[in-house]
Image 1 (cartoon, helix red, strand yellow):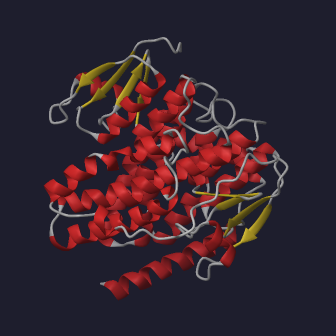
Image 2: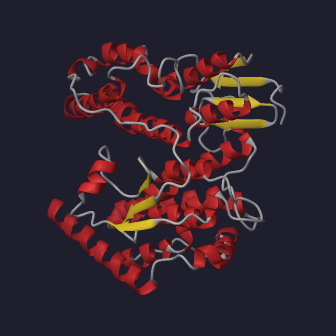
Image 3: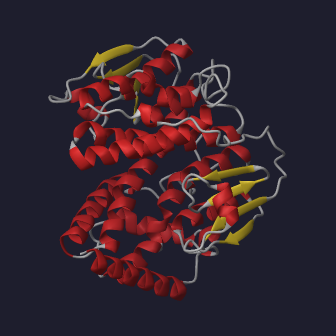
Amino acid sequence: MSKFEKVKLLGTGVSPFEWRIIWALKLKGIEFEFIKEDVSNKSLLLLEKNPVYKMIPVLIHGQNAISESLIILEYIDETWKQNPILPKDPAERAYSRFWAKFSEEKIVEPSRLAFHYTGDKQAEGVKLMANGLQILENQIKGKKFFGGDEIGYLDIVIGWIAYWLHFSQEAGDYKGLELVQVTSGRALIISEIMSRGEKVKLLGTGVSPFEWRIIWALKLKGIEFEFIKEDVSNKSLLLLEKNPVYKMIPVLIHGQNAISESLIILEYIDETWKVNPILPKDPAERAYARFWAKFSEEKIVEPIKLAFHYTGEKQAEGVQLLEEGLDILEGQIKGKKFFGGDEIGFLDIVVGWIAYWLHFNQEAAGYKVMDQAKYPGIDMWMKNFLQVDIIKENLPPFDAMMNNYKMYRKMSLAVLNVTQ
């Protein structure tokens, strides 16, 4: 794909998510055609170019159609190298992605509650948003921009706050920004580009599929690391220090850098150690891999939580959503050995848990979604995936996993009985 192919952007003219793309294209000096969409009467072009979510923004570059604003931003930065918006250092890139994800979860989502609801639900949204802004305040304190002296990726991602938040507050009749109290909390320290020979440590439980994604990637790269086992019911000071925002595993420690969130860690690993790349080289293929990774988190991981932790109608809802997600994923793997081609790659690692963990989840919670006849492509991919030496040699013990998941299910039911 030539970077000189014609560029089009589908949007409404109103959404802050499409303006992220406009700002990035303008910063890069890229000419583009803006095609205005009416989301109440979606065009055939939009439905064709984003058949999964059917939402704006969508960037069309020649034959490539990229959706999801954060994924589009990375595609733009990888396609047009001038005026880079992401930092060069893998650790700084990982931190930018971490805080972008944080802002989506802890500011964007609460702002929707605050805007679309009233009463207790609106108050909850305002409180959550204020907490998110408080944490973000500590990251910008003393700086001109999040990216330093010039605006960068994170400034573009959260730039909507500087303009759109006013309209949201006025129309929704709430105040979010005023609730932020300036504190002297220590900002996250981003280290200088570090030696690739620094010691690597991984904090995990030994059970979570999210940490095994990291183990597989490190093993594929031939990177030696120390695994530090965590008890999430009694979190260590090291975990609380290295992931003070979410206080969750996995956390990869590389010298002075501490990276959390498994998808972000995978990209950090691939950018730090170039051997055996897991993401494709082509920007469009990288964007697609990121898109389907995000899809799997939203449409497979989230529904499986409902199916596992609940009973009755709520479990049935989770199972139905999970089946819908697997139906779509089946279409992506059918006729292929791996999502990444002939060798496993980023997306295979991300969804690899399905090949092993889904069995424990189904057995412990008493439901069934995986069916060889219904999902022949996924079934064959699972068999291929588990036959890869790096994978089959790095799986948690079967019996111990089954016992763990039965215990987790009992704990979930106990919580349900208390709350009902």
